[in-house]
Length: 501
Image (tube, rainbow, N blue to C red):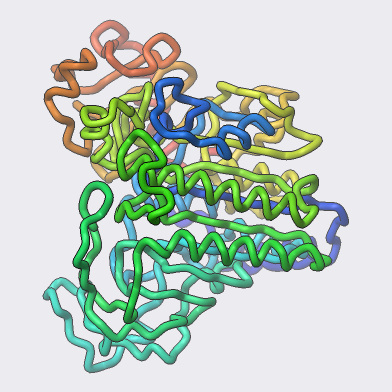
């Protein structure tokens, strides 16, 4: 069902234009820090047994609110980013990631978070991992030939790099973009705004080992001298510099900083090697935490902290290397949850979720209220005083009361999904995985044995998360009426194309 026809899109634009003319002074700046493949148990403040020091993230939690029941929309990258920026569950439109040289996932009719902020006078910027597609067909040469026969692999001379590439961040509300698009996808180069900043002239080459796992880098064009380990340091410096420039800016700003870490390739710089007791990934986590500290320091140094909302979260749970990390270093990235990236068990989508809002959010507060990243849209719209146009942010709830401790979560359910075949629904304390397993990533036998997990023999899985957060006791056979109730609720939410408006 197409809920937003063209006419509605035009009316939305007129509504937002009118709102822009009524810009309210004193609106807070907004900084969204978005980690890549980070586990719930990778934060020291959430895992007493952690082997990774995260002082800056722990400090951020102490200065604001830690949401212990916060979720990304998906167990993989692109869908979660789409949901965060649109306030709409990804599964209403698609399930998978944007692959190398794929088209954008956004429709022109979809209102994005930066577009909403711009409508009331905000300056907007994005640094880092975009992973939401560009219109590569617009710059692909007529003579371009595939190198892999699957429509994804191309050499450097397949594109006219002098042209602007449509469909990226600037086409969807950001005034400025600097990043590498996706750290392990071509082209391996820097993008600035809608062009590549350095023309990729070579094929991908890698001669060294990563600190953990494999490179996971797909073949394709690379800029000469490209260094994977310099991506996060470069992004961090650029963000700090951009924040410094805002102290003389008379507009509030929205800064979206989607990290490329601790996603593979796991490449901590030399000063962080050995900084944890959890191997290369642990060291990369320490570096990620350092980046958070640099951003917070830049806000402090430039007198911006008092009027800035800082949100920290992650796109999904940790990658498959997390299982070996338990054996090798006794560090459990998904603690105390079951599942990893891709899975629809809790560990695939229950993620770190921190909010600092000076004067509004009580320092050191903790909430177990259920919240999804799709709720960020409506919550910030409420903060900015923007009325969301009908047909936009269809799944987003305004959670200001939850953030400020003045009320309970407005959300009572979430539908979890990573691929078209498997769905789960959370309602209250219960979650129903409407499939024989919540696993999509392979689970080692030793892990199940060591943690008391057994193979499910029923058509689905039902768990009470209040009493069984690690999802060990399947209640499917014990509570058939609840299973039917949750299956009916899932269908009720899925069919209309919206859950809020």
